[in-house]
Image 1 (cartoon, helix red, strand yellow):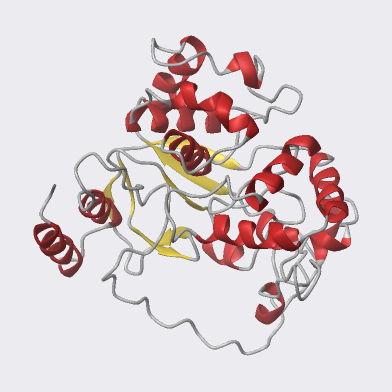
Image 2 (cartoon, rainbow, N blue to C red; image 1 turned 120 degrees about the vertical axis):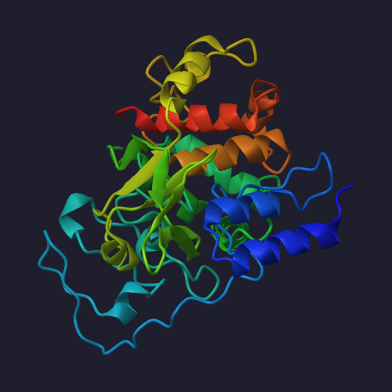
Length: 337
């Protein structure tokens, strides 16, 4: 077993030296017992212990905010109202069911569209649900409710929130939300870019955003997914996309692994369809968040995510290395859905 004192000293040195998240990730992953899985920060964005707090945000002055491409105005307070989902673009989706727009306070205090957006595109810290089959969404809610779907990182908020909400939501509301999101078309939302060097970032709200002071750092062996426009994303603009930086060469490696199995796994298209856009209740994985995809592969591999469909995936993911997960997530995210 590694020395926890030594690792603590290493982590403190990295933080005091102003090291980027790539260095912090290495320090935190080294802190687990030998052979134990320590979730990588790049896939499970939880603020490392000992991180100095960010500068305070400016106070809310109550003024209406405006965004390009819409005449809707919302105050900062309205963009944070979880029971009245902020909807900057009401014309890009059908009318939301009450459970999606408002939840069912007090027991279901979040409208589904708050985290997953009214158009179902979601963000890296949760999931894109647009275009998934209704049957698949219903099954995932059941898995959260039954406690078989969790996260390898207990501090990761969205899985814990879903587990809580699933216990209080009715079957009728689950069906209404599932039918709604299944009716939405999934479109390209994330720009995948191979890079050696990336912006320095920090974690805020379960997501990576540019660090104050700017600067760059090596990407290393990770995926860095972040907003293209931080301000619009923080206002929950469902048309402001994301960029995912992936290691150079990872897309091609992922394509080979997905198409052939590489002697480690089966071809992804056998279950997810030849174009990886889904097959019946099996979800499409083309064009979806690479950090989310990586989390699910890790969670299934290490026993945090279980359930009906997951049992079929366990032998598929059992031999994948971290590099394999990165390459598969990079490749699938790069595809046009």
